[in-house]
Structure formats: structure tokens, C-alpha cells
Image (cartoon, rainbow, N blue to C red; front, side):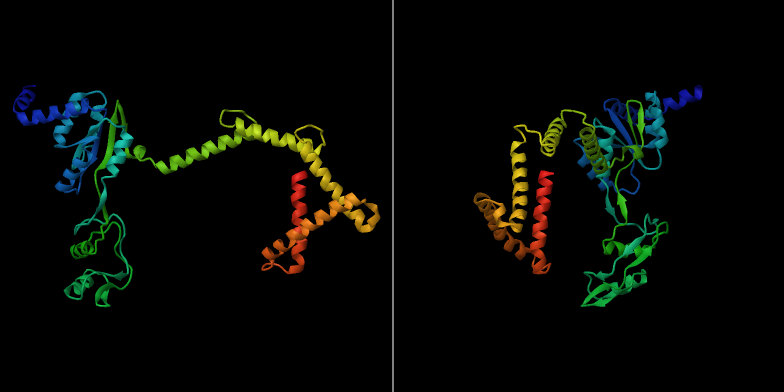
Length: 344
């Protein structure tokens, strides 16, 4: 106990102030997160801090001081200490942890890789011209393992090549030439390790939401629910209009097919009867011209004239696809099919 008092008494005031500042920031914000800042230059961190200033506070402190602050706050907050590792910063916001994660992901940008660093992915140099004129740089490319030559007065990459595989250390010469080619294998930014909100800790695997997929899933669910409601005749405010339109169409079809003499279907029944009548009359007239009277012959003549006017147009549209002799037959079949669909 005496050792504890002695240690506490000799804690510098600036450290005490730093611990209190961290505690105050946690208590004054709904959410705080633990983020990794490995490999991020100081000027980049300053830019991120400025970009986030309207929605979040970014604070870089010593891990030991952060750990003490979390322990002093108690409850479930000290559990965040397990995410303290290497270079760590704290971020505070009143937005949701999901929005905070999205904002932090937007801070990430492509960055050059240093010599000796481990390649996170296969590093590929693509075949094609560069902007470099002939000179010593040609030998530098070749010594770095990048196949290059002179083409049209410029240095050009001769072939697409994997110059460093994922998991391998990047040679210094290669790192230098990759930077000159503006090939940036690293994605650098604030790396969310965990976010804390009202006793709940969220890992990045929970916070990484594919908004496009969620939106697509919601649209698909709405469409499926709508179809199910219509097909099972389950009335809702969203489907009642479609259900009534479907019921009206089905009842009208039933009335026409069953020849029910109701005002709503009389026009369709008369039209159907007229088509059937002219069809029978036409067949009868073909066998015996005296089988139809003068009025009916006029009706048949008008129908024949209309068909004759339509036939050349249909023939012109199809002459490139089918022989001329078949076009009138197809037009006739299409016409009968359309009548059949209309009148059942």
C-alpha cells in the first residue's frame, strides 16, 4: 500500500490532466472508439482530425494513460483496454457507432509502401508506357525487377508482372520504383478496432455494413411481400388497389366467357359475338354467296378492305425475315391469336 501511495504521489501533473481529459471526453460523448494509427504520418493524422472536426474528436495519447482512464471509469468500459495495441488513438462522437465506422473508412487512402514492409497483396506492375524519358531510370527499373525498355522515345513496361507476392518483404529498390510509378499498395487510414456505446462493444465485423446489399434486400423483401399479398388475396393499404383491379379483370373475363348479360361486360360480349358472326358468315359466303344478305355482305366487304389495307404494312415489316408468301399467313394467324386472347 505504501508503494502504491508513493507511486501515485509522483505521477506528473500533466499525466493526471491527460487522464482526466480522456475521462471527460468519454463521459461527454455517446460513443468512443479505439483506432489503430500504425503507419500514418503526423500530417495525415492532422488532416483526418480536421476532416472529422464537425462530427468527431480524435485524440492521440499514450496507451498507459488511456488504460488508466478506462480503468478509473469502471463498469464495462475497462473491457476496451484489450483493444489497446501498438499505436492507438481514441475517437469520440455523438453519432452512432455505425456512422463512425463509415466515416473512419472514408479516411483511408492509397499510400506508397516502404522498403522492408510486408506486401499486403500481390503487387502488380501493368504493361504499358510511362511518362519517363530514356536515361538511368531504365536501369533502375530493371534492377528493381521491373521489365522495361524504350518505346516511342519513352520508358515502357514490357509485360504485366507480379513484382512482389503478398506476405513478402518489399525490397527498397522496388519500393522506390513503385512510388515513381504511383503504384500505392497500402490503404492507410484510421483502422477501427472497436466502438463502445452504452455498455455494448462493437467490433469492426459488426460495423461493416454493405448498405447497397441491405437496400437491395429490403427492396426484394418488399416485392416478395407485395406479390404474396396479391397472390393470397390478403388486403393491405399497399395492395388493395392491385387486388381490386385484379378482381375486376377476373370478374369481367368470367362474365365474357360465361356469357353473363351484365352492363359491365355487354360491350365485350357484343364485340365477341360480332367477330364470331362475321367469321361464320365469311365461311358461309365462301361456300354459297347467296347464304348471306346484302347488309352482311357489306359488313364482310368492309372487313376485307380493312384487312387488305393492313396486309401490305405487315408484309413490308417482315419481308427481310420471311418469304412474302408466308407473311400474310402469319399476319392472319397473329390476328386470330389476338382475338382469341381478347375474347377467351
